Image 1 (cartoon, rainbow, N blue to C red):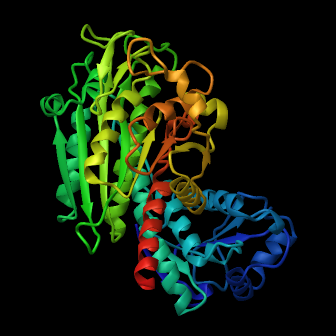
Image 2 (image 1 turned 45 degrees about the vertical axis):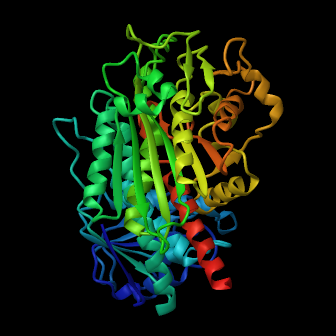
Image 3 (image 1 turned 180 degrees about the horizontal axis):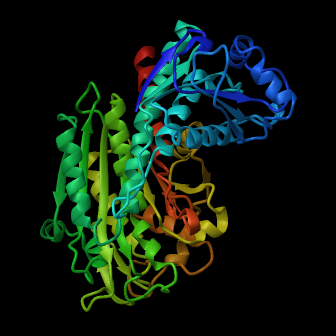
Length: 506
């Protein structure tokens, strides 16, 4: 997808389609008003006569617009102006994007920048516009004998009020394009079946990213022998029952002016298929356990977005990749494993394997003396009970990083909710036979999972995102969402902005 920004009157745009958001009440927005004037009040008449209902998300295609240079006009309902906030803006934008990519159109102009949103500037709106159109064009039909035809849309032009506005829009659109590509990459990795997307496949993807990055990214793959020598017994225990070997994947991005600057680290849970192991899951819906590497997929997607934006940061991306199967060598309930940190864990339930994989990856992150660490995991079904499918669960050992993650989620509109990590919950992990157990019982399951991980993060500021409710959709719309790539990328961009401010104050 290519994009451009123009300050010219959209009525003079020679294009296949002009996309025009319209409120159900109130005056036409500036670009819409110019189009209306040039077309002998075509838009106003359609609204006044009731031919177009501007209810939120409604789309009307006008195949011929006299007085305009465009081949067609697309009207998109914004609903009532008093209710126009981020959610309404994004719903209308998604509806427009879905309709646009179905057209036989090579290029289009969108005037969504005109939509007024309190505390959201043109750059933010441009970013969301590009994200939406890139997401709308996504198809996963690699395994279908008759693939869905791809959209013909190649060029999207965003309108701007003036040259200063255009610069902000261009910067936001560039970020949105990179983030959209990262989201779609995450969706593809997560949508792949478990017999294709194995730990070794993910390792190969890391090497491909590194090769295609022109030296900006390097990849290191630790195989089972290296993990055994390292002492990562917890991660290795997860994959013992599988014929697929376990991998720890480490990618380095060095973009800071100072090569020794402490990196920010992202750690992803990469269970490429989770049968539950000996603690076997029910058969219904088990196919969706290919999505149990959603945390790893989001780390890969964020790495791809970073390569599109090139922030001035040092970053490390770590993925703990394993397949959890009930083979003859599988870890059994009651087994005790020794972690890379040296703590012993009594495995009471082999279906609580994600934390066993992550704890060694979190310990491995210590060697980089990180400025911050965020891990991402489809960790607990309990988070869905608590938060549904709208917000990711957040736990942290540091209030500052927790607030930074929450702020990034608000900016990206990829939101999280902060849960407590109090000492009172830690005792639920007590074990009679080891340093701790890998589950804490039914009460507060998401929190006790976070408590488990916190035992391995005492040497750096850390946040944990439980994305079990947000990483994929079930049912008719089954498929990966690409979350939380938007949040994670924004979190990293915010760290660059912080560093820029500190440098300016020196």
